[in-house]
Each structure stands twice: as structure tokens, then as C-alpha cells.
Length: 383
Image (cartoon, rainbow, N blue to C red):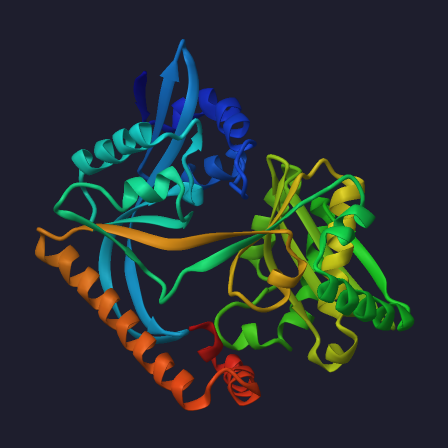
């Protein structure tokens, strides 16, 4: 097997078919080749590595180099920043026939090339070949979990019909969701699906109205009707990668959601609902509408909710949950990368200690859950 390295933007066109073909086999969302090209268009330094067999690409990955400030925080509360040179695995994924030997060769090429303090591997599936390689690199390299704890990659393997999907849910979830849908339907909602470039501005106008009412708006995760977001969604729509949704009550937006559709997988990016309608569950109703639309009107095979906790709407609505961890790698024989590792691990240790004390004091009962809900608007619920 031969490993070929590409670092010239002009070489990318030859890789497009292989990128999309190989990533269509992935169990989770990976951005399309058109999105990869966009990220590299303005002169970003990158390296695409491809494993060739019989003149055909069988494994592919892209590493993008960057210089930025690494944010150290508790929940969403910033402590301080440090300048960092890094390289990121685009899409958190090595596509195709990604066996351990090939992945290890890819990472060895990146390590030998140098020019970074940390390798940002991203949210990767635990027990995958990628995870095993990252956690067993050379002795002077260490991999660590950036977030306080592992999360779960929640997904739906979309069947042939919405009824088939609903039948796969747990009995308690089916009962709750059916009740929520009846409540919302009694309010006579209207739903709108947005996939065309000319409809993006109207979607963002309505989505921003709802987003301003959510706790995400105050902790740094808003959906804004600004030039950058419009440009991104118009680009996705132009490339047939956008699927966006709004639910209306009495002519006014009450819930929204949107994501990227690439390689037969829908990556759920953002959602929100007007809290005044919490009792009739507009968020759940909207997601059920999204699932139905993807099954009935697209060739989508997987709905990827992305990573989340063990409780909440993602775990209720999914049919598959895979353990994942947000990983970074650094060479601890060098002082500055070692400092970054020590700071990250120390902050996570402190978070764990505080939450363990909270668990001991409050237990797992209703008081603890009420406290978490009360603190979520301030970012604490995102620990």
C-alpha cells in the first residue's frame, strides 16, 4: 500500500470523488468534499493523506494547520487563553478502509512534518481504530480527553418509513413522544422546510427570533441572521447540503433546526424553541418532523445528533448510541505542549472533583436535577 500526500489546493479536484465515496460508508456525519474545499480555499496550510491500492484511493484523511488561542474555561466561562499552533483532523475522521496500520502511518507523517503544539483529533468513537492509534502513539506523545467526561454519539439509523422508526423507540419514549405530538398538533402548527439558497435569509430571520429566547443565546451558541451565517447556509444550499426547518404557531416562529446533509448522513447542527411553549414540546415536534422529512423526501440513511449527554432529547429519540471522546495529542518532551496538557488535565480534574462533591451532597434525586436546570442558562449545565 502506498501513502500519497497532497498539500497543493490545485490537486484537490482529483480527490473529490474518493472523499465522498469513502465517507459515505461512515457510521456518522462527515462534511462533504465541497465543504472541505471551501475551508481550504483561502490559502490554509493542509495535508491530505491518501492510501492507494491498485491505483485506487482506499483510505483518506485531511489535516489542517492553524494558529489560534486555546481557550481554557469552566463550562462556558473563560479562564484564560494561550497561543497555540495546531493541526486538526478534518471531520474528526479517517475515511474508507481505516485500519490501525494505515492510520498510524498517517499520524507518523504528520508528526514527522512537525509545525504544531497539539494535534486536535476531535470527537472520535471509542474503540475505533482511530481511537486506538491516537492513544498508543510514540512514548513522547500523550493523548488526552479535552472534555471532563466521555459523551455519546447519538444517531438514528433511518428505516424505510416513519412508522418503522417510531416502532424502534423504547416504550416509555414512544408514550411520551406521542403525547407531546398530540399536544403540539392541537395548536395547529405549520412547518416549513428550507433547502434553496433564496430561502436562507427568511429562515435565519425567523430562527434568530427564536434563538434570542433560548439559553444558548446567552452562553455563546446563538443562531444569528448575520453575513457569516447567511454565507455558510447559502453555500450549503447551493451544493444541495442544507436542510433547515421552522415550526410556526399563529403565524410566528416557535422552533427551528438545521443541519448538513452529506453522503447520505444528516448532521444536526443547531436547534432551539420558544420557552413560552415548553408545555406543548415544540422542539420534540420539530425533530419528529425532520425525521419524517428525511425519510420521505431524501436519500438520507443516518440522522446524526452529534455528541451529547446520557439524558435529554437526543437519548430519547435515537436508535443508536456510540461512546465518543474529544481527543487531543501533544509531544510532552517539549515544554510548551507539556504545559498545555497539564493545564487541560488540571482543569478537568477540578471539574470532576467539584461535581463529585455536588453528587455526594445532593444525590441523584429531584433536587440535583432542578439545580442543573436552574444553572444551565449560565453554562453550568454544559460541564
